[in-house]
Image (tube, rainbow, N blue to C red; front, side, top):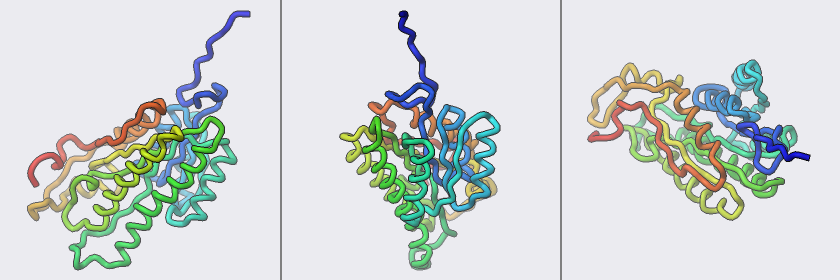
Length: 268
């Protein structure tokens, strides 16, 4: 008998049957970066588990994936609620058998406020979604990745350019994104012995609903209001796919993807 080499599909799980896709969980998958990343991951061969608060928007993303022959599952999820996050990963594992990638994308911001004008309620809302939500998803993904058949996986956290420098009057959001850097580095360290890689993508001015107003003018460090350029959200999606598709013995610990001409590098 002649041995025949079988080439796995682009998203196939190493060590598993070649027709079994890798499984990616994407939070905040109903709109913006999360939706674009989910579509791109599905196009790369991943089964996409779509998580977000609003089932209707998740179903829109799912329909786009399935119209192109991809596989997706929508799960309405509140990332700030431990039971809801656990149910998300339970459904993903029950449906697909494993978790290979988590894109921790869900996040929120609040209107600009100086430190003495920042309401505790608003601070707590940002921290609950941007920090606690990321932790809860990391905890569930890590638990499954280290105990599943063919252990291992990859966690990608959505940081921000605010993980490096703040915008004016953005204390809560900036603090939350600095916390993401700490989570990323700690999980990257703790994941080594379990074949779990963890990295962070810091994004600047992708053309989402939240960023589009910047093209009309946003406050700069000198107090002026200036328009800022945007980049296509698909550029971010391609970067996420690149990070996800690396073999687990390689990792992008930090990646910055930004609109080329935005005022990030240089004097404020």
